[in-house]
Image 1: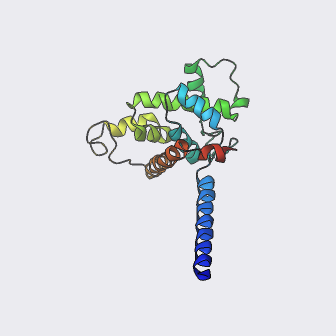
Image 2: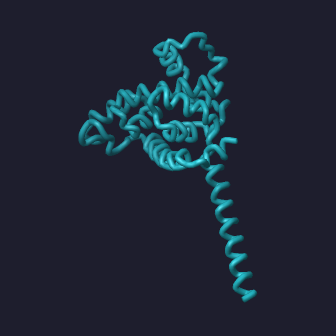
Image 3: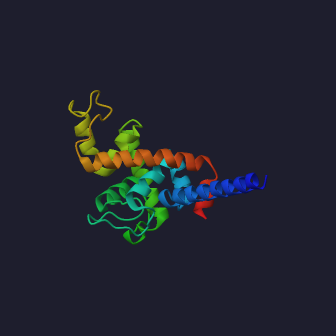
Length: 191
C-alpha cells in the first residue's frame, strides 16, 4: 500500500513539473506584452488579436525598441516609408518619429497597415502576412502569375524563401496565440 501511495505522489509531482515546464516554455516562446494596446487596435481595425500578436512576435519578439538593419523600427518593425504613408492616410495628428517606438503608437500604425492589407487582399491573412514582409506590390505580382497562384487570390508558391518562411511562422504563431487568447493564460503571462 505504501509503495502505491509513494508511486502516486511521485507521478502527481512529475505531472505538475511537466505542466509547469510546458507553461513556462509557452510564456517564453509566445509572450504577450502590451495586451491592452493589441486588443484595442485589433478591435478598432477589425483584426484578430492573435494575428497581431503573431506579427509582433515574428517581427520583434515584443521588444519595443527593436530596429532592423534595414531601418524598420518598433514592435511591428515599421519601415520609414510605410510610417510616412500610413500616418498621412490615417490623418494622425501630432505624430513624431520620436514616438515610433512607443508601443501604443507603433501598434496602432501597424494594425492600420494590416487592416489596409487585409482589405486589399480580401481578408486572406496569408497574403497579408506576405505583403507585410515583402510588400503588397510583390504579392500582387505573384498573384497575377500562374506559376505562383492558380486562382489569382491564393498564393500556392511564395518565390522569396524568406517571405515563405515568414508567412509559415506567422500563421503557425497565430494558431497558438488564438488558443492562448481564448484562455486566461494571456492575463497571467501579461502580468
